[in-house]
Length: 614
Image (tube, rainbow, N blue to C red; front, side, top):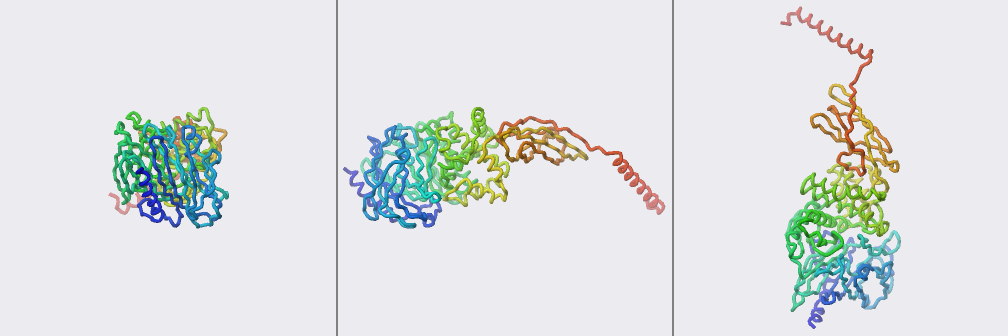
């Protein structure tokens, strides 16, 4: 009965929230420029049947240059995978709060996840529409990003969220739910979310916790988030929480770890990893703009899952034996705060634009925290070797593809998007050097913070930042199939006066590949002298002439296997050829020497006659 009285209070708060703009240090986001949508959600959790009773109010401002006859929402909680596990979505009504008129709608699409709301009249550009969606949602018993299992609720993308209107296509994005990865593409928005739960429930969510009101055995928790692409909730009565406040470029960020009490050590590892990752990526890419980050243990089939200001980590990794992998996954998901949450790609159409960066960032965490040797070990074990195993029985593929292109072939999707993607970034780093590589990523952050980005936007920005034409590189590794194999077929050095001219001939052995690539060649001298030179290889064979100040003994192509491909990376002896002179050249050299001796003799005699020589 008290639930009813509390609901009245919250309904008043909902109306107030629509009219107020409570400033939070959560993004440096220019609301008027972006025309941010606003969500106000009041959800009551009925724990005995795992059901949410929801009133969702959406204020949509038409940011597009066309009149809209309908609004489209993704309702991914209604995907077949969740319905099979017991999820049940019931829409009570959808109401136009501008006119108090009830609106017609359809729930369908390819997989039942597209909610289309018909508007009473076309909505003009910059015009605002406020609608209310009343619905109930039964949470499935499922180890997933949306589901309940063993007292942990994971509510990822559970509510109706506005789709993106594709002006280039003249239609709404109607992408279905992709169960093996993400098909998400949402606009930035502001959220006020009120959760009515039992008072012993520990709640983590996207945004700052504004207030927690307790009445008898229930409580209402209010979260507010600004300039985020979506909202997520994770909660459990079992959770233990550890938090720490850190400072990033003068801003305070509270980092929290939510975990079950039996796994306190792993919960602390997750917290420590998240803090280090936040600081590292803020330095490498640009400052983390939000005031909160929460790391939440959940039961899932996946390793981790990213949401604004919140990441899910599967409980399987909360083990001392898996500490290293726990760190890797936490670092990967924290990196998604930049790559997807802040720099906003379309995860469905271009998954490379966030997953490749998150995967590489996860390994960079080990490089900057534990050193180069640890980086090489982790990169080899988790990225390169799995990709080579994939290539033993599978063909290479194009990275700049959508999740729909890969379909249910998860093995191919992971290897081409994640592993090959991370290797592509590592090769780009080799070619540009650390300074140019990371300054390029900083420029991407500055130009696309809180903005949509495509792969073409990224490649263009990198070229602008470096002043280089890199079309040859991106064409080879993003838009082409085939992995090269390099081999040194000739190494000859000509030397005089301890200076050497080294001639190296490199062949590309894969007949199906025709790309341009800069390949590292290591030149070994005496007494441990070593020198690495990038050599441009075009087509099937290239020759390079290198001048070095030491005698070369051996050469080896791609010693550290930075360039993808099983190269013939063996030590190749260098043939030394000292310069020889022809008879004519010898006569000239001898004549010159005799002339110098004669001149010295004449000078000596003259000086002797003058008495200046003693």
